[in-house]
Structure formats: structure tokens, C-alpha cells
Image 1 (cartoon, one colour):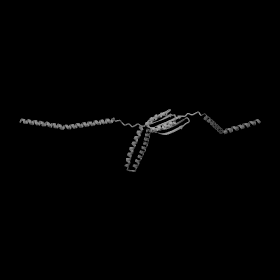
Image 2: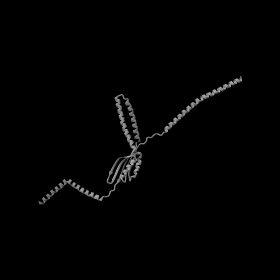
Image 3: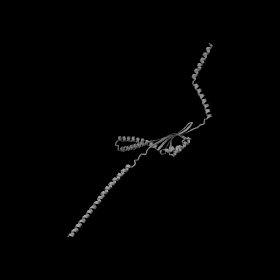
Image 4: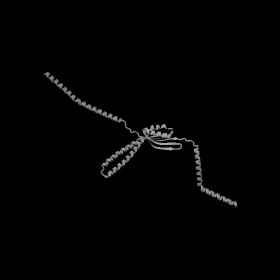
Length: 277
């Protein structure tokens, strides 16, 4: 009997132990899943924090600066004709063009004035290339003007006005009366005029920044012989012309000569009568 009771007690103990292990095994996965979820949430939060920090550290895109470069040069050369051909070849090489050209031919000097436009990124190289033909540099003035602020402002105004015009276009489709349509069309017309004006200004700024301008003046001195015989001939001709002009001037004074000769004749007659008396 005692042996039977002992066997029953052992069996109960073993069954209780197995149930305890089963409960532990059933609870552990739930706790593990909860822990995994918490760790995943923590990892997600940390990743988001890292992304936000990275986004803060990302470089800010800066608008490309818009610069207008222009200048003028006044130089002396050996031959203006050779220099002109040299400059024309250089302008073609640097993909530019000559927008204006003036020539002056004086007795002691021949001179050209060219307004040259070349791509801005090649402007400095073009100016350096002119050293090959410079005998004397009388003047050089290069200026750079930053118009970035104006350029960005014009772009923003164009974008804003186009957005407003788009909204007016949508309103025009929903207009219920002729008066509303006329008012909206008038506003659209005003906006269109403003946009065209701003786009014209923007195109001008783009042209000025993409191409730089150089006003180049170059000249050569002329040396001439004294020209003795030519000067003698000019002096004879000039003397003869001077005599003719003198005679013309004398004829302009004919009233004075008439008064003088008339007064002299009267005086002579008076003296003759006095002698007879």
C-alpha cells in the first residue's frame, strides 16, 4: 500500500513539473515577440533620427551666381589692318562675334573701334590673347557686376504670376456671367503683359551673363616726310587764295572808299579855289 502511494505521489510530482515547463514554454514566445517588437520600434526610431540628422547635414543648393563681365581697352599696334585680321580670327576661335565696328582715318593716325562679344567663360583668355599685337597699352578697364539677386527675383516673379494666371484661367471656366468673364479676361491680359515684360528682362539678363562685352580701340601712328616741294606748292596756292580774299574784303568796304575819295576830291577843289583867290 505504501509502495502504491509513493508511486502516485511521484507521478503527481512529475505531472506538475511538466505542466510548469509547458507554461513557461508557452509564455516565453509571447515575451520574446514583445521584446522583438520593442527592439524593432527602437531601431525604426533611431533610423528616422539618423535620417533627419542626415537631411539636416545635406548641402543646401546655392543658385549659380549671375555675373556680367564687360570692359574696354585702348591699345597701340604696328598695323591696324593686320591687328584687325588677327582679332577677327581670335573672335571666331573663341566663338564670339563683333557687334559694332567703327574706323577713323586721320592724317597722323588710323584707328578702329570694335565692340566684341565672346562667351563669358572665354573672356579672360580672349583678353590675354591680345598681348600678341599690343605695342603700347594706353588704357584697360574690366568690370564685373553681380546680378544674381535681380535674376532670381525676376524668375520668382514670373513663376508667381504664371500661377496666378492659371488660377484665373480656372475661374474663367467657372464664370456664370458676361461681367465676370470680362473682369477675369482683363486680369489675365494684365498678367500676360507683366509676364512678357519680365521674360524680356530675364532674356536680356541671360544674354548679358552668357556673353561678355569688350570695347577695343586700337590705332597706329603714321610717320610722313616733311614734303618740302608739296609745302611750297601749298604756300603759293595759299598765298594766291589769300590775295583773292583780300581783294574780296576790300570790295566789301566800297562805301568807305567812296566816302574817302569823295571827301578828298572836295578838299582838293577847295584848295584850288583858295589859291586862285
